Structure formats: C-alpha cells, structure tokens
Image (tube, rainbow, N blue to C red; front, side, top):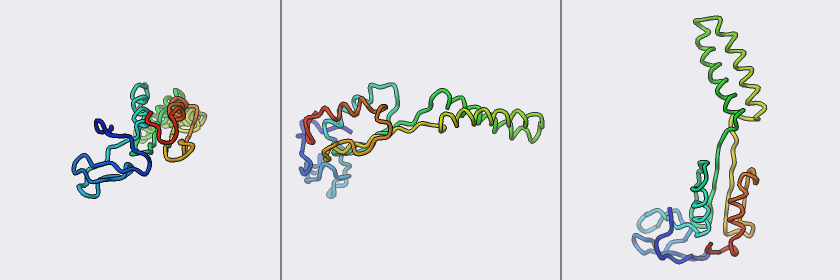
Length: 166
C-alpha cells in the first residue's frame, strides 16, 4: 500500500526492483512478471492524497497503483436517508398487507412520501468520483462533483509538476 523504505521516486518510464526478487518492473505494473508479487509502489503525491483521505470523517474508497488513483464516495443526505427508510418500511407494510389489509393503505402512503423525498434528492445516494493520473499534464482526468473533491484536487495541483515527489 505504501512505498518500500528508502525507495527512489521513479519517473513515468522508470523501472523499480521487485522487493521480492529484484527483477526490474514498471512502476505501473500490476505485479512482477517474474515472481508474481503485487506491485505496491505508489507515487509519493498519491501517498500524500491517501494520507489526507484517512484524516477525513467520510469513508473514501480508492484503487490504483503507480501514477494513477481512482477515488469514490457514496453517501446520502438527510432527505435521502429518510426517504429510503420510508420506502423500505412501506415494502414491509406491503408484505404485511397481504395478511392485514388495513396496512396496504399505510404502505401506499409511506411509499408515496418516501418516493417523493428520494425523488427530490434525485436518487437514493450521491456518488462522488475522482480519477487522478499524474502522467497527464492536467493530472485530474475525471471528476464528478469538483466541489466535493476540492481539497484533494488542491493537493494534486500543488505538486511540483508531473513527476513531483510531493
């Protein structure tokens, strides 16, 4: 997940020795072609981004190696949480309504209110995604909700060029 101790910061085209067998591999390789060990090297700037994410209250999922990193967060606002809960309860009442007919009306009401709440939230969840590729001039190759990722984009853009060591 992090760099090997005292390992240099290679450029895009550089090779690094595999920590297991010392075979030269690309910094962006998935694994060593000789011994099969996973390549865990990440650019120091991406290591800095991951360290920043670990200080936040939100849970950010990520994947990547070498010079690339994909980040994503799925969350709900309060309206979406309540709407999702009401829709789930309405399904329970719908099932119970097969045995207790008076619950069918309540099920329809809850489904209508819950559906309206989630519809005004535009979905049951919000999805935020950011794709970073330090080999490109812009570094940010894809972003969904730039305002949400402003802190991370700031870290990436403050680096010293495409091969900065952070």
